[in-house]
Image (tube, rainbow, N blue to C red; front, side, top):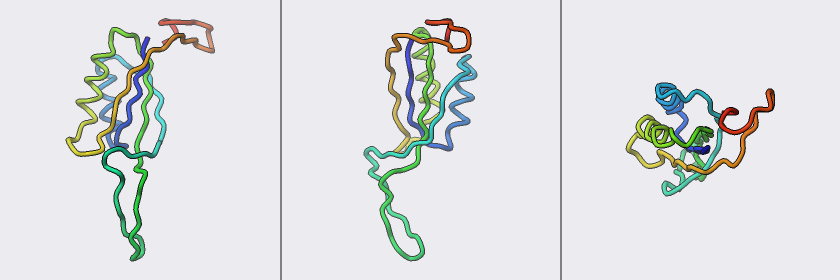
Length: 112
């Protein structure tokens, strides 16, 4: 089992969800986050004053899947979240040691 954590631009959520749905991945957790990478934020004008926005709004997707579909899921996220501009995000893949569905007590791959 693997956990895919993807940081994407907020307006790309529907595209990513549709791409994952097309390869039969239906569950994910979405969190609104703020951060920066190489783009290091930007400056904005508000009521005539210029200020620096260090942390940009992003979405953090967490998707627990079986190991055999990781490559397809990563490719689907890349294809659907990519704009070609700085700040498109990152994808992290980590191992999951154990999963338990609270409602039924199922564990392992059956709990996904």
